[in-house]
Length: 119
Image 1 (tube, helix red, strand yellow):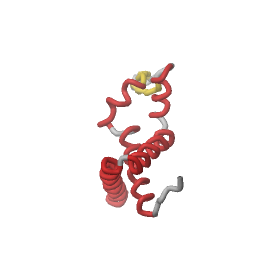
Image 2 (spheres, rainbow, N blue to C red; image 1 turned 135 degrees about the vertical axis):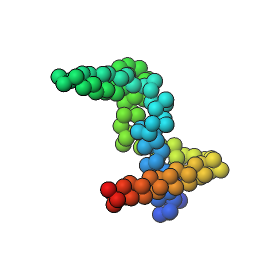
Image 3 (cartoon, one colour; image 1 turned 60 degrees about the horizontal axis):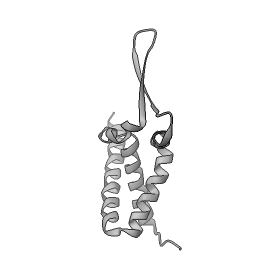
Image 4 (cartoon, helix red, strand yellow; image 1 turned 60 degrees about the vertical axis):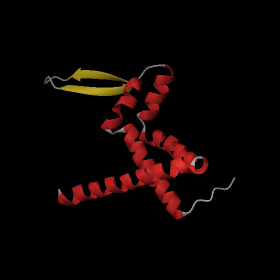
């Protein structure tokens, strides 16, 4: 099956994939999704400063998902598959979600540019 992909669809899917991937891998609001798949290790250095390290669970399905969620690039592949799938198979749900995520990605990029320019 040859997919009918034009520049605008590719741009929208790319922006949506970027935003959803960041949401799952980094954003605080989705910490509860990541939490079951990671262990927190606290280490104290010689000066008494504590550092918390987050590592994937050591075995089973939680290890696989933890490793996936700790890799921005890996999660991005699966997010892209998901978004492309819902665009083609459930467009009445997928397209509004893709649009929302793409707009949010543009807002995020504008904010990063603004922060760089203003200081």
